[in-house]
Image 1: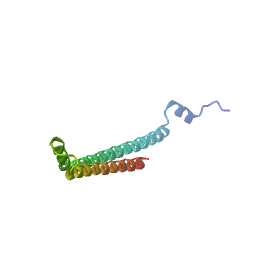
Image 2: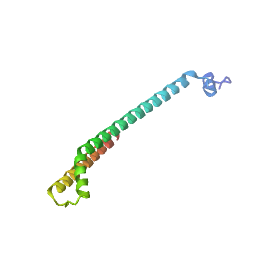
Image 3: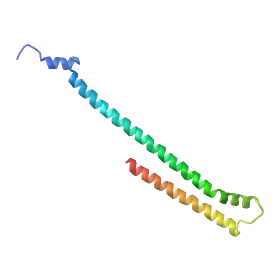
Length: 116
């Protein structure tokens, strides 16, 4: 065995090996950038989903406002709930809410599939 220590080994242990440090820095930088891009895409996707939900709610309430008005008029007037217009209004409102619930469930299922 030689008495002189390995210069490269001493430099690496002392933290003076710039090439090894640069490789670690580059790998870390790439990992951090990849994670940041992934987080940015996830945030954008979440905003897009929230926008779609809000558009759906606005469309639903815009469509249902006349029906809800008729239902409220019949609820607070002396008319019977069993007449044709009251039952039709309730049926349309129920169908619209159930269609919206089915669409929301489908959107949620699709978003879970995309995120997996």
